[in-house]
Length: 185
Image (cartoon, rainbow, N blue to C red; front, top):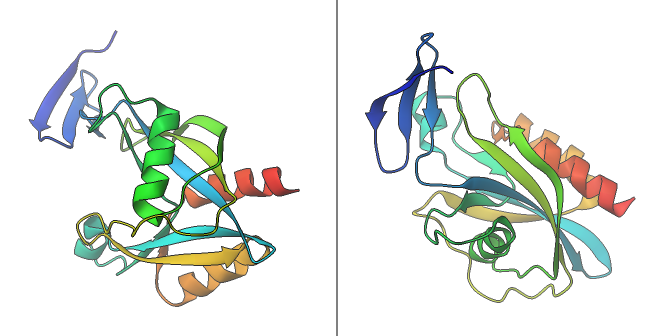
């Protein structure tokens, strides 16, 4: 078994290195990560909710000024006994103001950037029957800028238009789109 050394530690992120010399990022404060692919039933249509965010690493490296993402978050960072399903419902409500009626896991343990980070995530499809926001969404310290409700049939053209306007599109979104399309077919 490879020995792992922590090169640098912060509350939210560690920089680690294997004995073989591979350096990577690791989250010390979370049991898991969830990404939520919401299906919102509104006005007789099925829509999804994308978040427009400002991500400091992308801005610092001049890679973009905004990113399009699905709601997501850490499991167990604030509530250590929290289950992944509980985190899905909590994160969805916090970031969108909507409450999930049902949650179904589509994918588990997906690697986001396996050469750079040990982080993996689960993809959950959240079905939202009540199209009324129950609370004002959090901005997560100014990271979340806007919510976009997009008809499911228009997801790809809308994302292409966002890309053309200079926004980053989170790669994780595409596993959520597959999960939504599989659920709604």
